[in-house]
Image 1 (spheres, protein in one colour):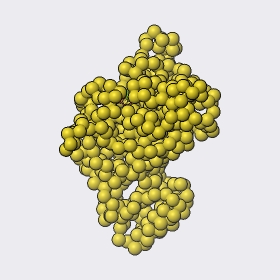
Image 2 (cartoon, helix red, strand yellow; image 1 turned 90 degrees about the vertical axis):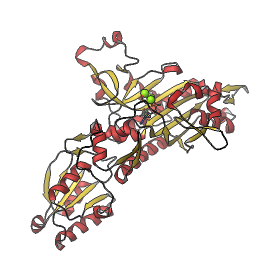
Image 3 (cartoon, helix red, strand yellow; image 1 turned 45 degrees about the vertical axis):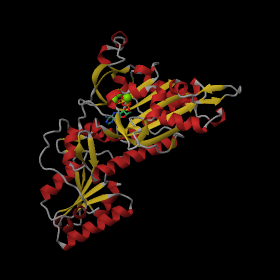
Image 4 (cartoon, protein in one colour; image 1 turned 180 degrees about the vertical axis):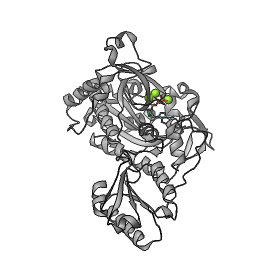
Length: 439
Ligand code: ATP
Ligand code: MG
Ligand code: MG
Ligand code: MG
């Protein structure tokens, strides 16, 4: 992409309404624009990041054997009356009446709708196990929308639902989700720690939230410092392997790590004092096993192996796709701007032309731009007639992992400059070498 033809409305001033770094940086980098409280347009740069995150979520869900689909944002009230949540959800639910006076709502989540789809089409245990998911916009009329996309009212969520014959199978689905979520976050350059969370009205203790540690996080968390040493890495996972998934689950959840709702001081004190940590975190996902709560209420039964109808065991599993954009920035920025992890960066390399209009420099930049694209590396080429300092500031702000700087002086010596956004280190080398290193 050539910056002269792109739409990147960066802001010079720090917007006063933004209280935390990610919100400030997303506004300054021209990624989002608020349209009303907690509702945002995703401008081109923000949209690219959102799409990359979405892609990673899809890839890891499909790898785990979960099936993508798409349900609507608007739902009828009737299904929610069946589950009893139409009243229970309260003012967080945005209710709408259509011209026929039918009661509708903008979905805050999809348990009811998916259970209805399931019961309409599945009648035998032979069709289980089944896990369906979608990535769709949700609406929750939050009391206090704030921190930009971190607590929006309209936000993008991946929500998945498993249907199983037995509790045991449903717990395997739970573990599968835990493992696939760990992979998902790690691919985004994030450490998200599964923490035992509150199951609220649903009961049981089979729920974990995934938290990214950050001072600006809204959740208070308590953990054993050793949990931060555990990583999934590149190990081979067989999602059908019940033992392996259970093993990973054990490994990641046996040390103390809880949100404030489930925090138990007496248990926490058994952790050696020097390892006890209390901190703040951002909830980027949650997994849940809730048994037959919805299948009982909504009569979602299958015929079991014994011929008798039996209510299916279910769980639901969410990832805050749009919140992740903010969470990644909270975890990865400095005073100059964003530092994108390679997995989610909007462009891989930025090219800065120090002397736009100088034919040798222009043609060197063009060559590098084409070579990068030919390698499958997306590039943002700053081909505007602007001061070098302003171009550098923009590149630092938008945080692409690599910058290649091209000017007449370097070209005279056959070199360009390659800069890493993360380390800030620059090195001179030939254009070919720079392209090779940025890969
Ligand atoms: P929170 O505690 O932050 O209100 P939640 O527990 O109500 O979140 P869930 O129902 O677990 O949210 O939804 C799944 C995921 O959706 C959350 O883990 C979070 O990452 C994301 N999410 C929830 N509410 C919002 C919101 N208002 N804005 C952006 N993302 C959200
Ligand atoms: Mg909430
Ligand atoms: Mg929560
Ligand atoms: Mg939650």
